[in-house]
Amino acid sequence: MATISLRRTKETSSIGLPPKTIHTCNVELSDDERKLYDEMETKAKNSVEEYIARRSVTHKYSTVLSIILRLRQICTHTELCPPEVRESLPSYHFEDASNNPELLNKLVIQLQDSDIDCSICLSPPSKMIITSCAHIFCETCILRTLKQSKASCPLCRCRLSESDLFSPPPEYTPDVDTSCTKASSKVAALLKLLEASRNENPSIKSVVFSQFCTLLLLLEEPLKQAGFKTLRLDGAMSGKRRANVIEEFGVPGPDGPTVLLASLKAAGTGINLTAASRVYLMEPWWNPAVEEQAMDRVYRIGQTEDVKVVKMVAKDSIDERILLLQEKKQKLAKEAFHKKGKEEKREIDLADLRTLMSL
Image 1 (cartoon, helix red, strand yellow):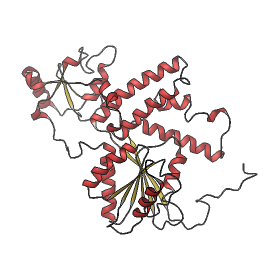
Image 2: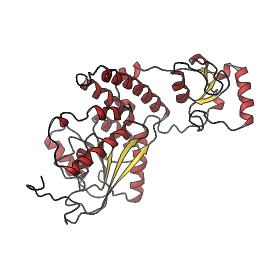
Image 3: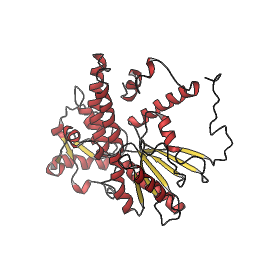
Image 4: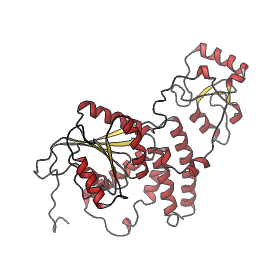
């Protein structure tokens, strides 16, 4: 390719663009999100392992992508996952420990001896669960233990079942901030970042990209409550309506709209959004070039402000593994402009699938 082409990139050309920085915002999923994600991931791993064992991944490719899509949706907002999928996952209800005074007496003695951490994750218990043998664990940690072939207490090896788990009485429940109960962890993190930018400069305009149009709708209300003036740009709009939105977004000053909620595909190419200087990507995409195109709606000729790009990534999830695939593809892109042959028939191959599912 180098012998027949001449390539100029923004990094090597002197077109006078200001600096662009890319940051990753690692978001910790809430307890409910983590429980739903872990349940879904367990089912997904079992399905994918079965397809690989039967050598039927090629025939089940659309099904595999659907499974991965559900995991990515949960990482962004649980409301994106269809209700029938959420309802199909097991729901756990534990008896209140206040109805078991003998167990509470054991617990009080144990608490007086020392500070208690979950013996599995070695951290203060999140959503505390008390076992019938008077030991304390995180709900997620002990449920994982019970799924083993020989479910037992990690400390005393006493046999355990779901009926042996108790939730603490109300007076023992730690105070929890419920101000963002309806918003996902990523949405709550996004609001903090937007508010920090507004405090820095009320005139700063931001573009929030997501591949899920439903998320754009879910974001409108919390942003409105936080005092942001928003516009939405997605594939359902006509060309004239999109042009009006882009023109309205370009109105300067704090009195104009400051946040544009944009579809990654519909608004990722062919438009000029240099009125903004902040870009937020709510979920990683398979192909890093698609994300680059979205960033370049803001970072292009005509941009006069420093551009800051933030990638929202859920910790310990498929989001992080997609980033690994992105690094692999970026490395390949540096070696060649285009990869030909059978290897590019699908967006992910079997090796990539094993990486995504931690197999």
